[in-house]
Amino acid sequence: REGQLGKEWLEEAGVDTTHYFMSPEVKTDVGVVIIRDDGENMVIGSPVHPCYMTFAEVKKAVDDFPGAGYFVSGLEVDQEIPLHACRYAKERGLVTLLNASPLLKKPAEPIEYVDYLFVNELEGMELAGTEDHKNWRRTAEAVWQRCRPRVVVMTLGSRGCVLCERGECTFFPSYEVTCVDTVAAGDGFLAAFTAGLVWGLDHGQAADWGNRYAAVVVEREGAILSYPALEEARRLSANLKACCICEGV
Image (cartoon, rainbow, N blue to C red; front, side, top):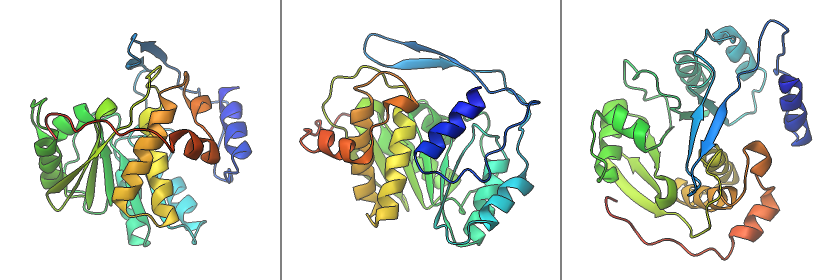
């Protein structure tokens, strides 16, 4: 049922589900979300299991969309297949975006074929090999030096995000809202950031739009169903006030 529901959500949003596969042999992962009074969350997910998807299936999906300009993936699918897929997509001329979550192990080699590497604070410290909780600019620089994507995008929760390109970092502040539930805010940020690139925004403008969209998301309860439609997100975020620059950025 969960797989069918996911397919319905995608189709309602206008997504091509040609390569959406369902099998009675595969069970949908489930999780329990614990939310604090301030809206921050902890997710207890399903046990780690072998990936149900093959690289050949991903490769065929990329090949079947020759007009695509962007490839987005994350490590929740698997720890290795998304890296191989990003490399292949980059070879095909696509802009590649990788969400390094959940980070179970560090990439063994530099990932220059990733254009935008998305990490949160904890993932950034893990990749950087640091426990410095105060200087996120330094952490983002270290992630860029070790992983070598074109751009590191480090989200900082309620503070905003840092973009690091060629070792040079720029901070983009978040927006003042009443946080109810942070579940899905990171994925919403990534989706909005990607949409901004598709529209022709530079990645600084895309980061700002991602912060605005995420600000609207955290004011609502839930995950996928908390995502506002585009015009609603634009309307609700239009007059938001940016937060002050915080320590460490």
